[in-house]
Length: 588
Image 1: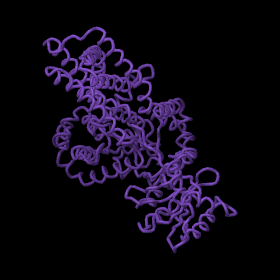
Image 2: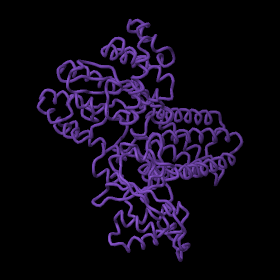
Image 3: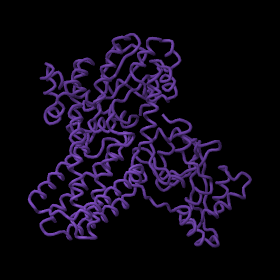
Image 4: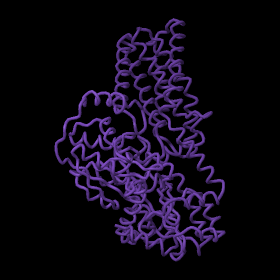
């Protein structure tokens, strides 16, 4: 899953001095990084593990080095942490700290990336197996000039202000401060308006803020971050399909970015009214919302035609319509007097300036367009040639994927190659993918078998989990073909199934015996748990496909092309028996 280059970028790569100084600080030993570097530099091999151990003794730390597997880390006591780990990063490797062992994996620290969580399989790829426990063994002489050195290190090396508005290094404090400042200005601006206008001014600002927040969330979203905000498990696929559709960008600019700049410019224009009592900013805001109505209606029509709605986008469209309606009502009622033309012109120019500044600075900063473009280029390359996609598959590590424990069998259980697909009825891409999978198994029954797993989008949603369990029970009771029919039925009538008894509804829809479905419930619970665990550990979304234990990003038509030339698959171990044995060995 992780290429050597990506591994080198992600793996901690500190030298002995950086991790030694950090351990000393946490053990309450007065040692600056400069002092640690001086101690390490005296060693004949300053970048080595031996240099770290020798320098640790000079700081009153006793070092116990060992080598093992992840089990060694799992058994580490909290009092033994942080411990130093050695990583296979770059030509000479590097060091980092193991801060904590968690149920989901581990927490690491290094001076470049700070403290962060990491999954077990990711650590297994990067870690060399070497661990060093450092314990305080005695008092040592205080470092001369320690306070001055530490102040310089904190100011110029260690302290890094988190100014990002989105992403893993986003600062909630910065976001909250900016939002508080904007709201305070808008409140002051509303209070400066005549009494009949104050409510309308505040309502327009609130609608603009709602639209801005929705577009910010849409722009900052990436497929790997799970369902977009407000969408949840039930609407996540609709949001994803809209945000990744061909209509999601115009001339390379995300529509969510245009929306963010649009609502942000209106909000800033209204906030600027705190400097004067003019109603011109409210006029320009209302006129802008009215002019945006046709484009908003067209985008809503596209979502209706595509039968997928994005809650974030609908929030923005609703704010546009409500704001335009409020402006028209204020204007027709006479509560909003027309300001001088020069005031309207100045307010319009200010709003246009805000729009341009937000579009050219904030939008690229928040958006993940470069990441998404890279993913799309990779998918285009893989989609172009079955041989290229097979080569990419061969480079993927083999994972402990047990299809029988995660999904219902489709095809002949003795077929030598296994395709495992995780699906969900709310996923718009899963329908065509399942159709292709069914056709693939029918064309090559002697070569390919499939296991179709149904995993909840939100494991904490009881309705979503009950639906997945009902689907799995149908598959266990009546076979893989019945599961595919049940998934198609669930896709057609998802809201009703989520709000009622999905097992009874599916049985009535497909003409199946409800008692037979109920008898399969215990096995269905285990299948859904297995599919959920597989998705949580190895998949970013739906549909997720694995071929012979490897993550497969190739189109299923490429799998068909491989099967049409079986000699290609002979170079792709493991065979069926080897795969099943590996799963048994790796299973807890």
